[in-house]
Image (cartoon, rainbow, N blue to C red; front, side, top):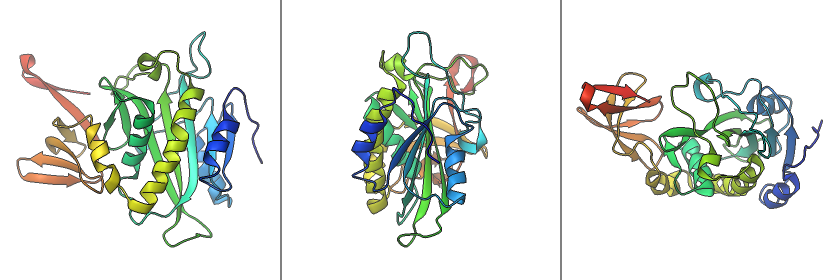
Length: 276
């Protein structure tokens, strides 16, 4: 059942921009839902495999990587729309190699929004050392794959428009309106979506390799000492052609394909590290 559209989201303009790229594409907006990613995965299990954009003005159970909660902001007085842009894009995709997909998505978003936005491997957008947005990607087999290797991918995006007032976060948040005063969730969505679809189509054909240098040019961790969730430490040296983090360690250059990375900056005066 199609959910009602809510103005002033530019649903028609987005559909017109994306439908030629994705036949069967639809746009839906809901005032509240538990999670746009969870909803599209439920629809997939029920047989829904068409490309769809699902936008929520509020999520009651939004989540990020490793099941961390994503805190949304209702906006501030006088602002147009919600304080957080929350949407999921679902579509069939059949790349030869899925490696680096979250990095390509992050680069596409940053490239569409502002030159000053940086990327933190593997799935965050940063501005001035603070978290601006996160990417959560989930995939599942389709019932009737149109081509070999096809899966249904759900790409969830949480982008702070206003800076969230949430205590206790491991990384201080940022809001896009700090960087681009007057911007709204609706404007940001219209700005990023069609380029994101184009990025996914390039990724499907060519993998992550075309995005390696582009990602590294925005890499927030470049030449930064980092520590991984397993305790391994080293100097981050960008990503390789399949999106693996290159880590220079005392044991030599290591490739990291799946780990939680936290940044550690030395505080010389105290002779210890602080973790962001």
